[in-house]
Picture 1: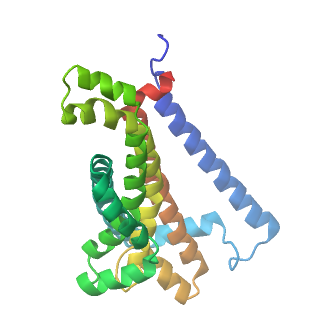
Picture 2 (picture 1 turned 45 degrees about the vertical axis):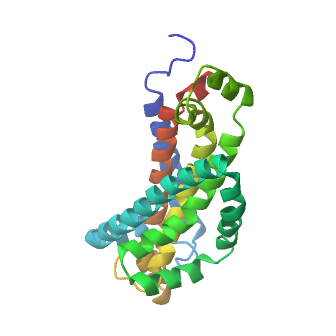
Picture 3 (picture 1 turned 60 degrees about the vertical axis):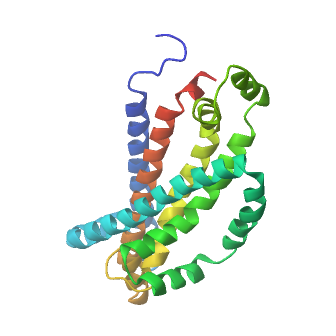
Length: 258
């Protein structure tokens, strides 16, 4: 196998290691609760949590899919807008000086306050939850895109310009590819942020979603159901993060050669 060539089955190996780690954690969790006599008030056993999910599969599946939809919509919109913002701020310094401070100020607004306003505007809809997820996603992607573009070697830019490259060619063939590692750092971070935004949006009065299950379980002091919702949210967040990390390995393939 040539140097720098991706190893066959590496993705499968990473997946197997992840599954093995989850199994080990699950076994230790179950053993610790049973051996230590931990009360469900503090930490229920993993088997009781899985039984709670199995008892209401349609409810948990519908909530999982609803939160997933809200998260993905907000994440995708935030990623696209963030990259576009980063490119515009890199090209137009005046626009950066005028608008970027407003973005910073917007991030000082607590997500709960922003979410309340959005839900008042759009009601308890998927759009409202997706906007809250977008709110938490676009800013880190904007910042990292701008930083990645600013870090491109100026000599490489001048070299391509000397060969007659247009601004669009510079962007697509040099600047964006060079900024991709920085952009993906923000995209991985935004996985968690967008999920948090979607769940927080569901706390304002929805009927379906993992945030709704969390709130209902907390108010009714249903400890096992609370942990079941937490487990489903963790599964969603981990899967989403893993998918973005896999995409990063495929897109930024040259990092394995460094």
